Amino acid sequence: MKHFSKTNDSSKQIIYLSNMPKESVTAMKIYEVVKQKARYELGPNNLTINTNNNDKPFSTGFIRITDASRYTDVAKALRTFKIGGKECIALPFDNSFKDTND
Image 1 (spheres, one colour):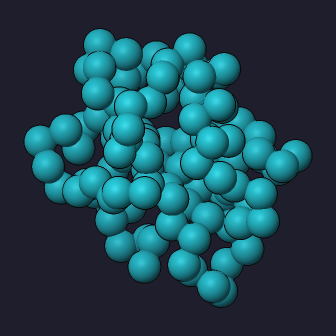
Image 2: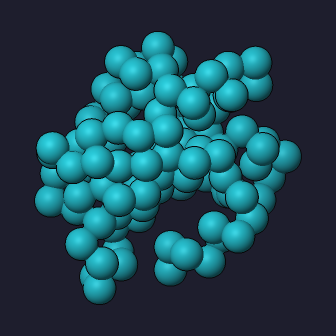
């Protein structure tokens, strides 16, 4: 999966995902959650999952909403969601999140 830059012009249209259980999070599950809860289809290369933080039992990630007119609606719809029976969160991206995934 190709990663996208969080520092480009569309950074205002990025949603930060957190508390996703490492053992059950997949790109397909995130695509399904976004489609079902927000009625929005993520395009190719609009999802990044960070699973390399071994000291935490959860994964984080980012999704890019390419349709600026839908960003607020998608962010609200995804505020909380479940993957593998675990409660996950989605927040509008903020620059303070940049260093939380290393």
